[in-house]
Image (cartoon, rainbow, N blue to C red; front, side, top):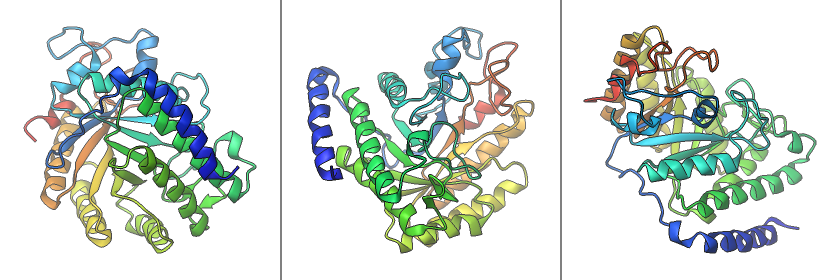
Length: 340
């Protein structure tokens, strides 16, 4: 069955689900284009809560995490999603159904969401781009069909939950392409075909939602330019260039200069969708965040997301959260969002 007829069948099913949920089908109001996005990726939150982790504000009052974050001026949330994830608390969950439920919760809190497709069953990043196990033996044409179906279905799940995403990322840190080896950057036509299929399906369900491609390590312009040149020259579609950077101290200025160069070269606004700093150096992280936010605003960047600030030991060993495990309160790192 070609992707048009498959999409038609899925659309009919999605419409039926949506009809049952009409009272809640009021779209989230995305942050205004003039509003600088101050965000946080909190994809671990449901698993932390399920395992008994709680959160306190700076005064020691237990509150919902989203309420605490809003108190720091955070106005958007980023949520990853995997295709067929395991049940591991740190490295699994985040199926589209779980992600949609969390997106609905964010909408209720007045927070638009950035949906981050990894196109895998677990982590994909600059150094790892493994396809979902169910796609691993597919040819390009088969994988293209799978991409159409998966993204279209996923967007309709989000829609049936009454949420219009503020943004959607097609891939996570895709410097090397996606779904190796079929969608590797060394096979740029195939890579672009897969990503364009994802772009088209986001737009079919949510025509006004901006779509992001996401690159890591803007300190390495050759890597970022290598992907974007290949993608653009093969007809790649995107609205915003998303970048990850965990730079600190004297390195921040150079990274900001590169971000501005990327924005200028491709004519697409830049958004920093990942930032973080060492848990044991919160004042340094606060200062770095303030420098990034000021720099992004200066060249017209759209915003900055802190990656998993809510995590604290012993949930896992991630060392760049912004929560104190002894008090379960935020560290001073989050003050970087205030008055910035």
